[in-house]
Image 1: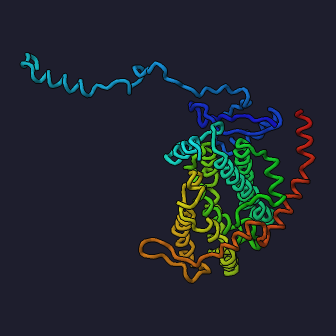
Image 2 (image 1 turned 180 degrees about the vertical axis):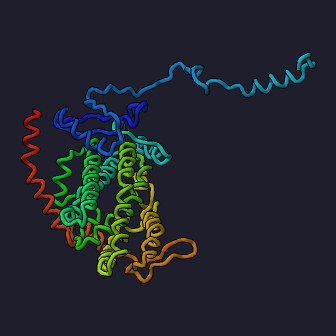
Image 3 (image 1 turned 120 degrees about the vertical axis):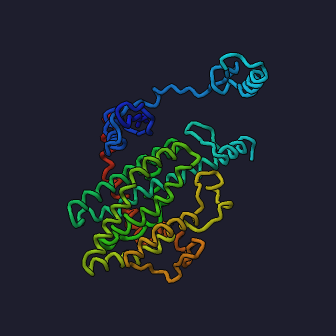
Length: 97
Length: 299
């Protein structure tokens, strides 16, 4: 028996998402089982079957260089915005304000 | 407890999730495997009482609905045995242990069915009791199990309605039909009250400790009583427990079930245990040539 990972698309335009896995003696049986277990209620518009050993998994995402500047949480503007507003308020009124 | 186990425990207790390939303490793996295996066994054995009624269903519509429900449950067993396999126990070993009486299945599947009234009561109230436990498992720390429970709960949603529909048809029919439901209810009430298990305090329940279960047994039973007793009573049906009552604070009182009897039933000494296990053994022997042929052809 081999294990096949099953991915399903719930409706047109939705991404393929992992649904579960099935054990089957070969790819033909895997198709039959997948149809029954993940599609018999019309809950999927498409299924992908992938032999488990074909899946390349990457799990370690080490942020060695602290690449926070790529993310929203890498920016903390609160303090400086406050200071900037105070400075602007303290400055002499300008034309057009 | 070693440091790694302590860290794992802290992780799951604070809401952390575990995936199939992650390291887990032996105790967690053992308890989880046993629990999911029992769940899978229950789905597989749960089709047997209902299977008896496919040929005897009163209408074609009922026959189709019952068959669909049975297919769902057989499918749930397949999905759950997959989870068990990824935890390290092969499906074949699970099926062997089941027919050898080495593993358990839910108490309610150890009882015989006597009439079409049973089919209604099982689909309505046994499934209602089961869905309460299953919904609580959506929060299980083992993510592959929680994910598959989402699919199972979604599929189960029509089962309770199907059962309630059967019961409503019978109670609005002849006196004889109403009597079928009442008689079935009288027999099923004790197993239903035992279904969620003895009231272990959450702090003493190792399943809650490892966050495999998130709901203490008594809380599940109270939720069942709160949800379904009023629905039974409003149909003019009675329940065979004079102590059954709702206090002002919403807590239900009831006659304490005989927990030793529950233990005896789930250990294979229920009224239909031997017959059900024998039937499963027979099915396994009968389809053995199919497995062998398929595997030989695929090889």
